[in-house]
Each structure stands twice: as C-alpha cells, then as structure tokens.
Length: 508
Image (cartoon, rainbow, N blue to C red; front, top):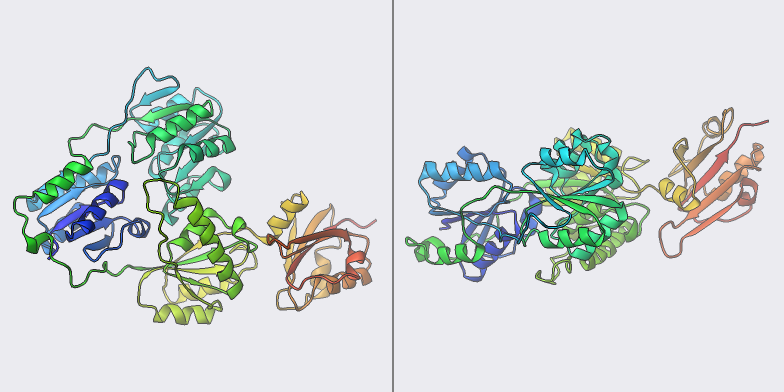
C-alpha cells in the first residue's frame, strides 16, 4: 500500500518523484493540473493525483489512503496550498516535511535590483517609472498589475502554458503579444532574447531560487540594461530536497509494506478527459502558436485531417529542439509521441470521443484560426449538446497571414468563403459594389471554384481593373504569392487551396 504523499507541481516535486521511482518507493504525487502531471516521470511506483483540494479534501484523502508521511514540495508562493496541507496534516496527525528551494545569493546593494514585499508594492514603484515591463510572477499575481496606468501597453506577462492561465490573463486584458505562455525554467539567453524582443526596461520576478531560474533572469536583465524588481518571499522553516530524501529513507515507522511494495496498479488515477480544439494556422510548424504546440506535445491523441497531422508532428519535432534542451539538467529523451487518428468530421470526432476511455488530453486540429470559417463551430455545438467540455485555442488565419505578407492592414476587410460551394453573384457583389471607401475582400477558395474562375466572373461583372493578390500554399516552403489585376488572374491557373484578396474601391 502506498503511504507517502507528495504535493508537487514544482521542480522539487519532480525531483522527489524521481527519487522515489529510483529507490522503488511507492508514493502518491498530487499536482493541480494535467500539465503538471505530464512533466512527472513515468514509473510503476508512482500514482498521480490530478486535483485541486481544500484542506478537508486533503484530510479525507490522507485518512482514506492511510497516508503516514506527507511532503509539501509546492511552490514557495503557494501560501494557500501550503496552509491547507498543514491544516490537513494537523487534523490527521500525520508528519509533514516542507521542502524548500535553495536560497539564492542576494544583496540589497545589487545595482539595478530592488526588493519589495508584495506585488502591490512593485506596482507602486513601477508607477514612478517608464518603459515596458516583463512580468514573470505567474498569472495569480497579475491582477495587481492592472492598477498600473496604461498596463495594457506596458505589461508583458510570461505565464504557464495552461488554458486556465491564458484565460485568466485574457480576462485581465493582457492578450496578443503581451501574453507569453511558456514553461520554465529558462536559460539566460532565452530570457535576454525575450526581453530584447519586447524592449523591456523592467523585469518583475519572485525569489524563485535556483530551480526557478532566478539567477538566469537577473543576468538576462543586466545584459539588456534593464532593472529588476524582486518580490521577496516569506521565510519558511523546512528542508532541502536532499534533506527530504534522507528523511524519507530514514522515516522511523517506514516499513517495506508501506513504502517499497510494488503497486498492482502502477498507473495514475484515471485522468479526466480534456478536449482541445486547436487552430494550427496556415499549416507549417513555424506559424503555429507556442500554446497550440505545447498542447499537442502533452496530448494523448491528435485528431485531424492527414495534412494537419503531418504538420503537427513536424511542429512537435521543432518543439522538442526548443524545450528539451532548455535546461542542461533535464533529460534529452523524447516523451512518447501522441497517438494520431485521421478523424476530423464532427460526427466522426464525436464517435471517437464517446468510445475513448483512456482520459487525458485529446486535441482536434483545425486549419487556420478556429474562429474564421472553421469546422470548430459545428464541432463545438455538437460537444455542447453532449455535455462534453472543451477548450478552444486560436491560430493564425490565412487572411491575416496573407495581409502580413502583403504589408497591408485588414482591420476594415470583408471576408467570404468558397470552400465546398459556389459563391452567389449577389453575395459577391454586395461586398464589392456600393462601398464608400476602399477595403480589402478576402475570399477563401477550394477546388470547387479557384481564383481563376472567380476572377473571370468579376471581370465579366466589370471589376477586372481592381488590384488583387493570390496566396497559394501559404507558410510552406513552396509558398507562392502573386499580385496583379483581377483580369490578369482570370487568365491564370491557381492552386486549388488558396486565398484571393481583392481591393474593392468606390466606383466613379
């Protein structure tokens, strides 16, 4: 029976889990999210509990599982969780070991480094400054920074790549390039590159210790000539990782049956099903968002059309090169690839999900952006009908991509789709004729009617003189973007899957 319970979700928690696996010590490991679960080592001696619990639920779990020793290896700033663990252990009279992070060397005289007690104090200090701010405190602290004048433009937040964190940030108005969803720790070089990209003059961080990449952040800020505001953490009594490991081995009531017995069911508790609907952009790995790629990386199954699955697997290869080597102390081995299924029609996806029993994350891939003429809409409606929860992750639409390549603005543009249908002439004309100011019209095309056929129709209607552009195989190595008049394209063959942009103008 498993009698050791580790509360993790941190580097220290993963180190202790690995220690237990290496020493054949059976242990429960509790993490708050599936993302934290995916980062843990795979071992027959570990049982993973993915759940957020209050102190009463913790106490009930300890009592039900007859836990004899608890280790709190949660984040130094997770005060509420640490408080709940203490209370539960006191209620059940179970020994508790608090695992602390290694303290970093610090000095109040450090040039360009300022220490404050709270996030609110950091905001007060920033209120007397100018320049962009790189905030690395995590999503839970971000609300305090909304008190800063012009925070939507000044604040660039780096948070964990979880749907919950991203949604919380969006709710605070921190979106777009101001939101960086990545898992650390990060090297000095990557921190410096990020700060340089956003032209940060300030960094706000916490005393995260060696495992939290504290030193790397300080050095990166200095390389960029930026100042650092450090939110101090309260001093705690506890033990280092090595000391905790020694105490687990020397636990006075430790018996072989309690800690070293191999579990008959070595696999974690069944994970809840997480369905993700992800837009992968035009298609190439380079145009997928980092959030989408990381969700694919941590998925059990990828569903989608063959072309999208192929692009997703190439993206995972790129992601591995970026993240597996971010920390020299981490293993360079690849996690198991997600299973792939060529399933993408809504009815087929529903049938798959209803028959799927394994739990964990299942990601359904969609081309382009999930909100731009995407099959996401129909599938989302079917999932809602059946009470299946899901998360939607946006991608880069072909229209946005083409506009960027052309160097034009699309804020007043109009959009149409000819995927699987012939555009009605009246529908087409209502977007081109009778307008008061110039605007672009983007039309998604398919094999049903290509750019050439559509441009011939427009030419016959008297719009052959309008400027146009055709994007074919966008984002791929053989991408082709051509510009000319509508009439010129009416006499040119184009790829079946493409996008046509027409600059509509008021008629004289």
